[in-house]
Length: 354
Image 1 (cartoon, rainbow, N blue to C red):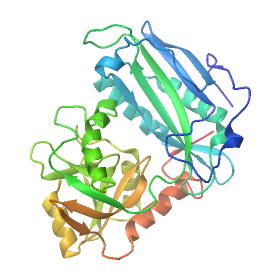
Image 2 (image 1 turned 45 degrees about the horizontal axis):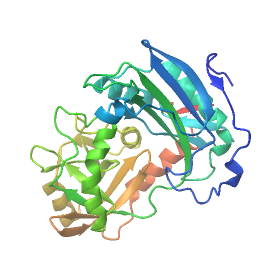
Image 3 (image 1 turned 90 degrees about the horizontal axis):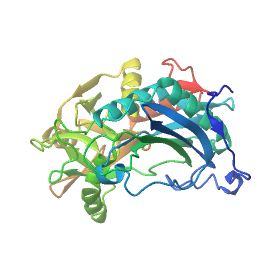
Image 4 (image 1 turned 30 degrees about the horizontal axis):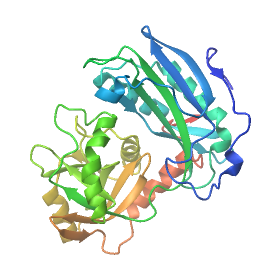
């Protein structure tokens, strides 16, 4: 296993992995033995280390706590059929992380630092990668401003942290969602395309209201007219209408999802027509009512590919598929998982093997 020469590794005295019930893995609550950290000081990344997972000592004056200068990613490592470990599309996640960082006036992370620290970290935590369909090691890179100074400006100091948790299926049943037309997630010219904490903080109150009303997720609409759907709370949206895959086009209000991109590549390779364009609420409701919308699903690194079973708009619920099987989403999910777990040829070069 090759490692960066200046990454120091301090391992725990005793691992906790043997205490874990891998059949019951709540998302985001059980973390591995170690974490990776690096600091950006004097215009360079330094102090790269893997240390035991635990609290960080930080000043209450660090600017992220006051001005929200932070970005993060979420990617997964999978146990391959031959017993090795593969990380899914780290290059795509790397580019998106730096795109987010640029929008938030934060320094870029060099590819060599990203991929070698990621690979070294996952190799260190290899015993935590669960086995089986739907199971993976979720890895969360997060960068945040650490300069202990008040004042609205870009920080001069940052910290990069990698932490991970083994995880199982995100959702266990089709989603019940509501189209949100009161609150908005993102605005043109804003930071909707960036994976930054403020986007998620902005969504918490509307989602809290939706959850109390019995919904699993929201479908966000455009801020200008509130007539076009954009994405779900934690995932992109894909619809199957008249046998074609249709997904809202990207822009500066929609996150460029890695799973979304993967699904579009797979669908095209399978000969399934794909459209990336504006999708109106009226089109969705009309297609459900006339039976041409046969499938809808939320897609993301966490959610993977989760069917949407019911969409509510203006207090009227619309059931999707009307008992018909999710044919296209099932085909794509099977192919995607075959690549993720190394059961077929990686024709797109998506798996980074350790």
